[in-house]
Each structure stands twice: as structure tokens, then as C-alpha cells.
Length: 375
Ligand code: SF4
Image 1 (spheres, rainbow, N blue to C red):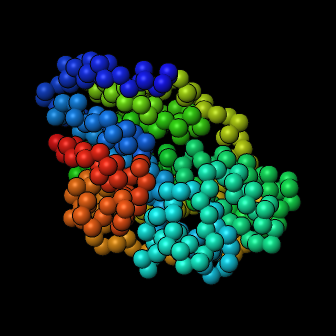
Image 2: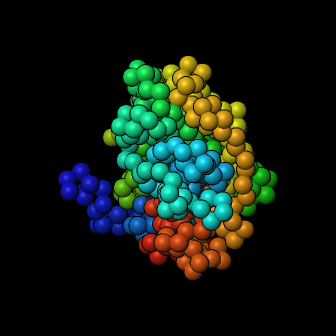
Image 3: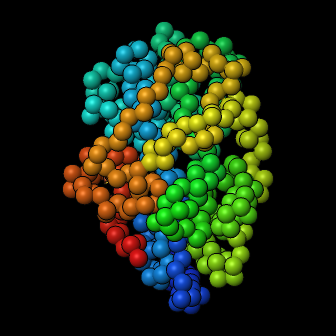
């Protein structure tokens, strides 16, 4: 396919691998975190880690939207459908994430709850228009990429004067999570997660631009290279990071210049700022409470805020004891460090969130059988 094949060319990948191999220094190691689940997927699918020298280690980050959703929030959504009689609409990946009491949204649906898988925020709005006698709640999750469409439907619902539509907002923010990782004891104090640089998100950056990452580069002296999701994008970004590290630079570079600008999508940013404001704190699976890392609906749109409409209260719920998702999302462990990886826990029977979505580290490793990133 034109415009895709060019970025998946094996010969060029091997050339890039040779250049990386020539340029890495034998006397040092390179610890590179790919923040985004899309990159984790590409790295596993195309065997990118296998093409790299042993002293270049890729560390999976927490940028899979489904993976970081804490159990308590899924419990809240299930309650809305099972106990409050609402139609709950959400994206497909959310449906199978394990919740409390061995439930998931999919299992709650099997028990009679009206939970619907949708492909876009607009589908949720349409569901509300088609079911005027029912409360319809959009269980909205995701990073900055999926936030603008949620803002659009909230603004549309207000214009339409819809009385039966609300949004349970769980949108989270990438820069706060990166800052949290860099401030974590594992990175700062114990050195158990050595981090030299970041492969920056692709789709998120089309919205927020490259400017927000400049802080990390300057403040923490960590280079960031924003990369597209194709294998050659990832290979080239690794080469750019290796060069920065060799030269002692810590800058933001944009490999994905075909889609990302420094300023990002100003129209989308304006819309998001019109509808949402920062939450003081939000629990992420694996990272615990992260200050100013998520959005809530502004007072002007309060009638569409499911948390206000249904009086939702959040209760933190611990993960399954056997599941290492939390440590994996912090970059402390790898999927194969989990004792039940690939045995009890598989994509067909996920015990933790990282085995659900194709962007989850456990699902990506399981599906593509890549176990060599341990160096
Ligand atoms: S293999 Fe399953 S249980 Fe283990 S960390 Fe991954 S998702 Fe959690």
C-alpha cells in the first residue's frame, strides 16, 4: 500500500540497524522508553528489538489507554449499567478489562447490563438520540488523541439540548505521566529503571505538538524523539536518540514531521480547553495517584458530567495480586517476569489490563512471541 509500504521496507530497516550498530558506543548502554502503546505494538510486531545491538534496551512505558485505567473506574462504569439502568457506551478495548468481582464490562453485559461497544464518540451521542427514554453514558477514556472527539460530542449535546446524555470522563494527559515516571523513586533514587531518553508519542503529539516535551529535555536532560508508528519511524527515532546521547544533547526532535508540528492542532486544543479542566489528581493503574494528570468536565457543561449526574464516587481497588501490570507500566518489570504470563493470563483470558489491548505490553509480547528485550 502506498505511503505505508515505504515505512515497512525490510531492506531499509536492515540498513538503519547497521547504522545504529556502527554508532552505538561499546562502553555505554542506551535505555530508551517508548511511552506509547502504539510503539510497543510496532516494536513487538516487527521484531525491532531483535535488530538492535545488545546495549540498546527498549523499555515499555504506560502509554496504553486501556492499561492505565484503574479497576475502580471500570467498577463505576459497570455500576452505572447494572445498578443505575444506564446504557453505557465505550470503545471495544475497554470491554474486556478485568474489574472487581471477576467482572468486566463484557461479563456485565452477559448479565443483562446494556453496555454497547462503539467506534466513535459520535456513536454514543447517536445512541442517546435514538433512546430518549434511557440515560446514555459515554465511558470516555484515552490520552490527548481521543479527548477532542469527546469535547465535540459534549458541545453538540448542549447545542441539541439533550437531556439523557452524559460523559464519564477518564481522559488522561501524557506529559504529566512522563514527569511522574521521571520523578519516581525507581528512576531518581534507586536507579532500578535507568532511563536515557524517550520515543515520544505519535498520535498524541499531532494534537499537543512537540512543545510540551521541551520541559523534560531541559529540566531532566532527557532527549525526546517524537516518532511515527511504522517500523522505520521507530528505527530512525532510535538512531536519532543514540546520536543525541552520544553527543550529550538532550533535545526534542521530531521524526514524525509528516504529521506533528511544534504547536500541534490549535483548534483541537481550544475545543478541549473550552470543555475540560484539570483534575487535581487521578489514579493511574501502576502509577497510583498522579497530580494534574487527567481532565474533568467544566462547570459550564456540568449537566453532561456523569460523575455529577449520578453522584459517582471513586474507590481505589487493588490489582489482582498475581498481576504485574503496575510494575510493567512503570518500566520496572517485563511481561515475561509475570508468573502467569502466557499460562493463566492470555489475550483470551486476560487477568490484567496489559493483556487486553493490542497496545498492551503483555498482549504485544504474547501475540508476537518477542521475549528478547531483557538486556
Ligand atoms: S501477564 Fe497478565 S497478569 Fe501478568 S502482568 Fe501481564 S496482564 Fe498482568
